[in-house]
Image (cartoon, rainbow, N blue to C red):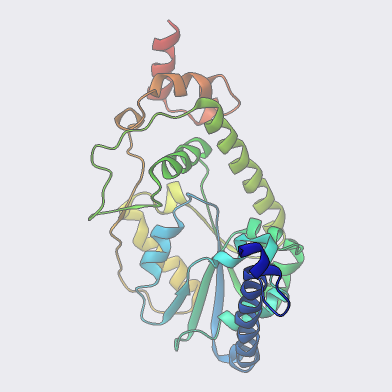
Length: 282
């Protein structure tokens, strides 16, 4: 009966209705783009470029507390290649009209622009030419980044808060799947560098600029200075998904250390991690 209903003359399939709804939503945003062209001269706009598990939720949670900044988190529609945005730059311009503040910011990934079938180098060059500021947040420690991503997938929670901490959470990781995740993170990092290599941008690194609370306010001030607003002190209740000592959360810690030590990512291991691998192989 459902198939007959779907193909009955005059009926509209669910997929078609979804597409019409999506296109309607998309073109409403282009109306906002027309407004953005008029407001561009009096609004500062920036894009936060990042990769998964690089501290972007932590950074955004502090930036959005500033009264003069309106922030949009990443637009999930950009994750879906089957629903490509027709005019991507105008889409971003339309978003920038949101909020009645002198500064607008949003977050995205270079990989999301790639999935839209758009040349990311040309796209971000056009944004910069039209006055958008680029802020890039990355994470050098690919091993910790990969482990964090694996834990998120297993736990099905993006970040921890004071109300929902890890508590006694434990995880058993598959070594090969973890190495694949780290490989993908490295490829994404290389792609980011290729896109941003010739574009002016503010570069931040999670380990040096965000992981320690005593560095966060200085990092925020750099961003506030970049977008032209006075610095205010903010804080976040977001907590790390991985503790400093990985043995506190990974059940097969020694096995994971052995796999990483035998890979090209050995240099990312700490002395304690290497000692654990040596104990296993002794």
